[in-house]
Image (cartoon, rainbow, N blue to C red; front, side):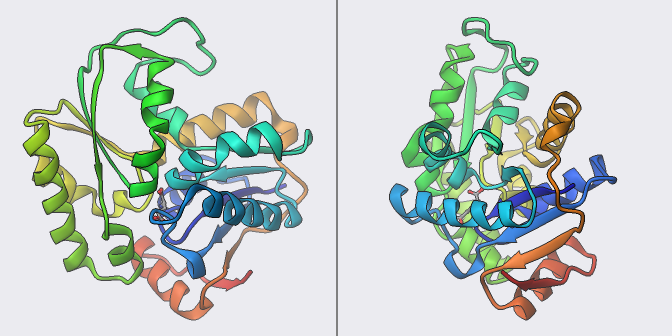
Length: 270
Ligand code: DGL
């Protein structure tokens, strides 16, 4: 049994870390498409093709259930994959819905009409492709009314993180937060809508100020996956081995991953 975790690069490791802690008995196969990162500046067709190829690779590893630990793929490709591409015996889940359920205080499967919620002003930080897709606003509108969302496309941040340039990533985060605050001076909540951004969570929180609640996805996705597998145990597929696959250079990706997670991670070529 194994579950697949996909990201364009290293960001999904924040989700992998949380799901491994929550479900220590489940083997996970991680796939980082580092050779094609960042996805956030690609168009929707390109993101769809790359995400399908990575998902097929994870199916070949015996993972019947694949988590897209990538907001850009979840926003730009998942709906199309679910509507036209995924066979009946496989599942692909994204990272948006657990976050929106937490923000709108809903339980999984609560399909009641949208209602007023406590939070009214939400700042969304995400990649340019995720912001352009408006997938966050679409999913939110199914569940809540009267929420004002201001989205900031955070160009450059994923690149800086993938290159291991923390100083540049910090400077970019601060300037993106400032740009957003010019349009929405007092957000109540901020969504880190890219799985790379938890690596910069302290900088986001500091730049936003202590009164802003910062939502990051990893733990929410882990809870939601645990819940899903309790209801659908048949989707813990045939694979038995945890491993890390990359389309990039395994040595350099392993070194950066080890630096991010502060434990030894060894990638192999996908
Ligand atoms: N970490 C991914 C996300 O959650 C991808 C970012 C990118 O490749 O641009 O959006």
